Length: 125
Image (cartoon, rainbow, N blue to C red; front, side, top):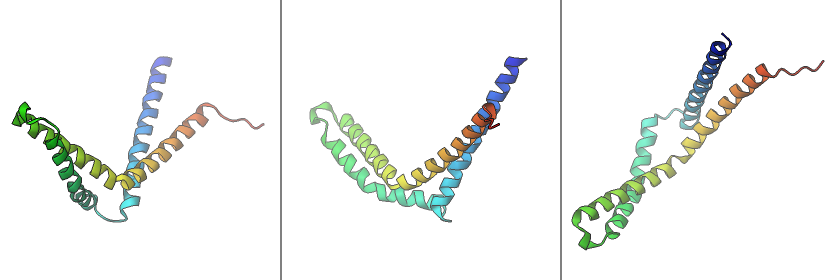
């Protein structure tokens, strides 16, 4: 009985942490966007990342030796382009990511603090 109660309370605590994290991510996204649709922000970031994707693809095409075959040259170009795009996209969306992470961490921290205080009551008397 005690183990089942402990498991249930642990699962409820985990669910509460999960919900607070998701709510924090949503709140951080809304706070950063200021009413703009998320799709527009992501599309703008993706368009701005195409330059770095092109640069990465060119660098990837130059890396392999021509004797190794055309398939390896194309594969390296694709990998370089994908890497360039991801770097550019990550850089362009860093403020959105920071806002979402900050508010999620704050809300999860609040839940953790309430849980700790419930298990370790402070008696000032």
